[in-house]
Length: 509
Ligand code: ADP
Image (cartoon, rainbow, N blue to C red; front, side):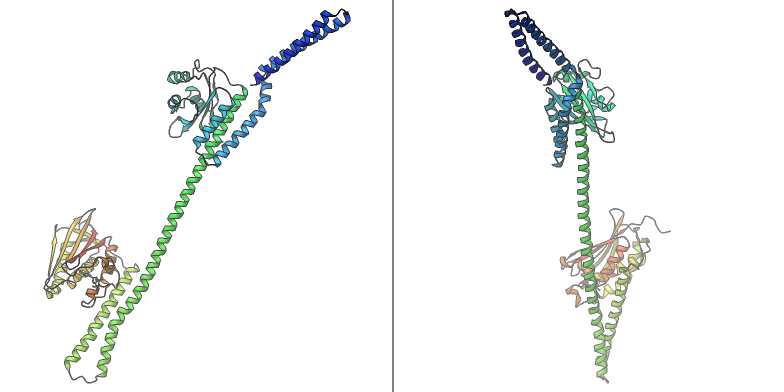
């Protein structure tokens, strides 16, 4: 453009001066006066001389890079500011880095006629450059360049990335850096020269390359070279800022997620605490109710005895003292159970696990509970697939658990019912122990509740003795031994309580 402007200026000058000289020449020829003739020839000489010196000066100006750089410095500064603002604006709009780089490449393409820009990015996982942006370069060429190796002699970009310096290849056809399919494809795409600059961050780490492809074999002018390097700096700014932005966004999202999780867990903890508090109040109120019932019975019958000072009827006397005794026993059982449960809940109860042979425990408990079962004509049997099954448990606590479950199976069973005890090896080195009965069963909506203290089924509450604490203690003890308990039941058909305990790895000495 500069060159064209100068040319136009010279053409105008030339016509003016040629006309001027011709005029002086005609005047000199037509007039006879020697003085005027000499003056006209002098004027013509001045015109020719001035025109000659303008030509020389102008020619010098085309080749003088200093004056050209001087002229383009202002323009370059304008472009630099425009580019920088554009990058910042696009970053502000949170545009994807690809479209920012594409706009950048487009902006540079607008500044120099007949050039094409490409931005390659470093793949941190391997020593290669991958496609970043090249809005106007043929797709085939970019596909081939994608994954270009960073090495001392690999085209303009691979070499610029390796050396971390601007590489100017003014003739792709003849350059020793270019060869093979890259050279072929570049020439086929119409590229004759390629100037590439590394994109470096503030610490000097390589982020990618910015390349200008030209359709003529030529070197860049100073202004073009400085524009290329400025473009590399913009690209670095865009890539680095985007990285920081992305890291910040990820951190922010992470933080939000963490706050969400924390809030949720706090909410769960609060709900748990509220439930525990409510359970505690319910426990206290049911406990006082349970304690008051037998105590009232004791006080009531004692008052009766006191009122009827002389009870002639021995039968009535015996009946009333029996009531008092039963209520006293119930009270004692209740208090013992409450103490037991509160000890477990406060973490005071410790377990001492050992290898326990189930067959021995089953035999012992069966003979202990058979008399009670016989009273209701209930058969009590046990079955072991493998007589040498050992569990890893606290012997005394395991017995307490089994006695409670089998007692319940007898207590809540029908007359002439059945109670079966079974044990077998289960998944993941565990042993399953089943206690099943043919009793009244437990409705679905009550199955988890009966493990809470003082919960008794309406069907069993009035008819059968009990405190409603046994299953709560049972579950706690099993959990202390590293196991769990679950229940299957069918109303009117019976229930099966299954305990899972760790299998013993060592046999007793
Ligand atoms: P308790 O037997 O002293 O009432 P538990 O905690 O052992 O207390 O049992 C709680 C309640 O669960 C019992 O009152 C009874 O209603 C019900 N229950 C327990 N075992 C059985 C069973 N095998 N069959 C039917 N109901 C049962």
